[in-house]
Image (cartoon, rainbow, N blue to C red; front, side):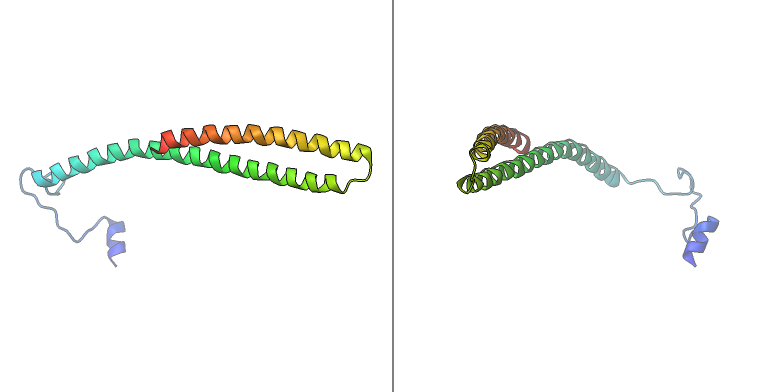
Length: 126
């Protein structure tokens, strides 16, 4: 029933035709105006703080991505070392040696990036 009244433009509150009221509404008291200004100021500082949190979240996602990459590189190294122990031909063993060396270099690069991203996250997150 109330919803139908709203659709027709009716409401329960009757407009107040006293002078100083615009559109039948009541004026905001000075106390409420001060509260609104304070709330608006907090909202502005909160939005600046939200940008910091977004930078912090981005930095944390970078760290998580690099940690996954580092874990994958370490798993690959472990797998290749195990396969290297059981290889039967010289060419296959040479390939495993090459793969292990490449993965170790990659792991070192990822570890360096991870350290850099952690420093950035410390700066962004405070």
